[in-house]
Image (cartoon, rainbow, N blue to C red; front, side):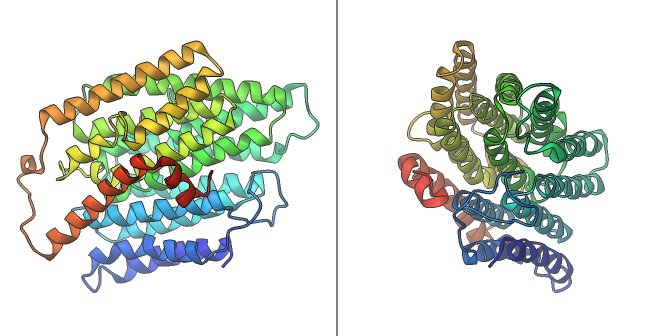
Length: 418
């Protein structure tokens, strides 16, 4: 199965689910949409070459083993979230399918134009869905900032690959456009206010496509851009990502200690995205790639539980995955971030260690406060629905424990990374 066929399955499953499931009162089967995408990904053969924007002909679409593993993990995470979510209306399945299709094309694209347009399309779908569900300043900001960032990638795409332009303004311009565009899609400061607004005002089933699908794909793309820029461009690209990433990580880690449940988790997500971006900015791919993959995998497993608007049962156990102490999976990802930064910047290492300390304090505060689902007064009664929710919840938590106990095995099994 080709990447284009995989994208078609994602889009078709989402559209069909949105049209059919509400009419037959089977909205709970919405988890079948990402599972259909997962089946298509498993049917796709892993290509030998890595798809790098600007590194292949325009017609080239190729999903390598790492991209396949990332998309498969995202599909499983989204299925778990839809099973746990208190409500699934139906239209969000269409947005989820279209964003999934755009993400598949973006990770498979060898053409920089196709890559940028796919990210722009996925961002537009998300922004329109969020604005329709919760019109307000926060969701309108997602339209302005996120779509503007994707537009910066489209502006940079015609200049890729930079090729022989080793000096002059072209490498600097392209690097700045790429770094700022990717930073806005990742929610890095000062371009990331839209992410917190969406996480606070939009239901979990609607907002999940960004932290559990779009953001992981953007991170992997940001790491691959390192291979197509000349030295002059890399200096600016890496510098921008490192500064924005570390400032984002420190700021959100500090504020996460003070926030409420869901807003607190949103800040922890952004702090880890900032750490991953800073690791990419060091230019040390041997450490930055496994670091970002482990951090992404951690949130793909904790996110389905912690993104719920209500204080879902098992939330305190999910927070243990993010505490940053061994054998939590977050410890290994953050440790690799520190390893990458120690080779690039002393003060960057200090900032990363301060961020990790604040994230640990956040997890400790959650555990001490003992927030429970009973606070909402909406606890499920034992039955089939309760059993499905609990099974999905504990599958995510136990998956995180497994990754923490065997991080190298998890990287090899999911992403094919040694």
